[in-house]
Image (tube, rainbow, N blue to C red; front, side, top):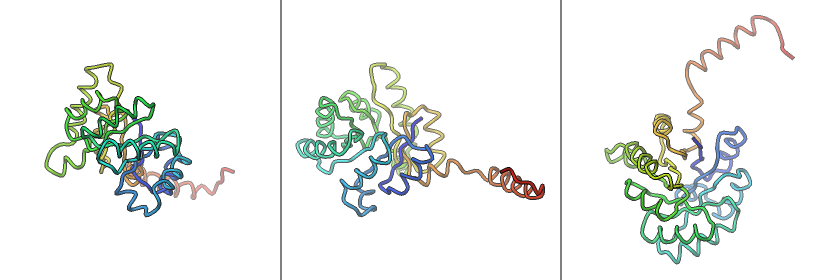
Length: 218
């Protein structure tokens, strides 16, 4: 499974990229607001740090506006993925972008039927939102499982399942078990996957025992 960092913080992205832990980045208007920098500058900096797909979301909700904004964003770097909403207008834009050779991430997916339509429109990635379904007492992982089954039923579908709104390590594990192609996570969740109390305890013991040997390695 591939990992994308869901952040617009260049420091977080650089740290994860240097450790070889991410394959790409996703951004959205809320993350851009938090970063408090010009959008194009943020994207330029991210694309210098990672050569993987970098999702850049359009702000318009009509197809003409999406096409105008998306074409502008796509010029920033070759690895830019235009992010459009899962609406009829968004799918129209998706089809046009794909015909132009631009990668597309169709976002705000909350049903398997929506995911099927996004694949029909040629989406590179479909982003089902796990956490937001959990928020309304539905199991977001059920959606990932349904999409996986449907896509696997039709080998001609090339759209990758990008599990989004991931909030916990358990979300990541479940998505991996189901077979999501990608998980996009906040940096804190990705780094949290490395942690385990028994690892910390074991390392502390080894460090103390090594000190008692009075030896050095180099």
